[in-house]
Length: 296
Length: 267
Image (cartoon, rainbow over all chains, first blue to last red; front, side, top):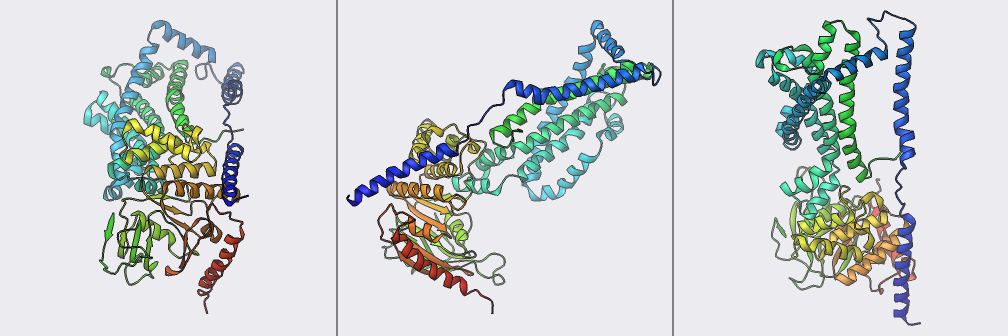
């Protein structure tokens, strides 16, 4: 056997070993079947709600307290159908959702550049970083009196309270996202020639996306909470009837089933927007990066 | 790219005429921290890599081999001395594959092509060609986490090649891989180096790996990093890491390396 033959055999052999290793080490990704998802992810929370309703009904049946303090689930359901037939249910929900979502989008538009600036410019960070963290722990309901004096009892005051609640958490999420970018990505980007604005666009921003999304999610929760607090406190015919105002009206009529309905609607809307919009987006981003560990 | 901090007229070449080199370091010093207070990391490094030459830099911890590579890559600047890379920004491969997890394997390569100024219409075809070259033809749409460690390093190699540089710097790129996978990647890098006539500067602390791959092995001493000795290796490629020729030379170089390390015993 000549020496070139030996070399050729060895090269073919190497390719074979390589292909074999690739096959051995590639684990096919399996999608969990729908039935399993239903059983593991959907069934437990549904059962939880059923248990809560059962306990509630039990407490009502045992007459632990008077019905004007604890109405039955059926009474609350009646309040809901009443709103439905009066044709006001959706207009109440929409008044608040519209305000909450547009306030949230405005917060994104303002919080994002602030976050980038604080994350990337050292003096700005030293000056604004602690202020942003501090604002995040201040309940935004504390801003309602100030907003009312500055702006009057109107939509602008509502938006101001939402912004003061949501902008800090969106900015802080982006800052955390940028801080957590592994330095090796930045070095790799640099060697590939991604510096300055090209580096920000192709490396820094996509790498910071998971933290940013977490900030957006929290920003929505803060927007919604701030808005409900503001609607509860500030009362004016200019504001229209939103969920917070509906809840406060029911308290004034001492209509406990209306109050409970108000609370449940606020809860449902907050959770629904998170489940329909933010959670799928976050899951998609994390899964595509292999950051989501599938629970077995 | 020319990093000229001090000009030195007597740039030494390792037997190459001036102007015929891929990388040239002349009297490179590197100190971190304030000058004068900290001990130098690199001390008077002069080294020339010819076009198409495969050089491994070998050394124990503290020899500044990664620092040296960062300097050649332009990620850091020497305290004094000059570094010339006439072909422009060299490609750099890390121990960590450093692939971007928000992009597919193919799009990682396309980003490198885009940043290198390749026209949009040609990028996808070129990325597919590069994946074929590292024998990952079917992996264009794979995400980074769907690939094994060895496959990731091959995509990283393809991405480095996409930069179009004739100089490839490799910073212990196979150190985190198991022995079998590493062996496979040694064959790959040898094949691609020969096909593309690249100049490779490969950093490792693994003596056998250095001998398996290189035409020239450069041994660095530690603290400060200085060039201690170098060997030319004329064994034909592709070599086997278990072969007698590689083993014999590895023993000789290991002895020398151990001698360098023993010098640091505190008395």
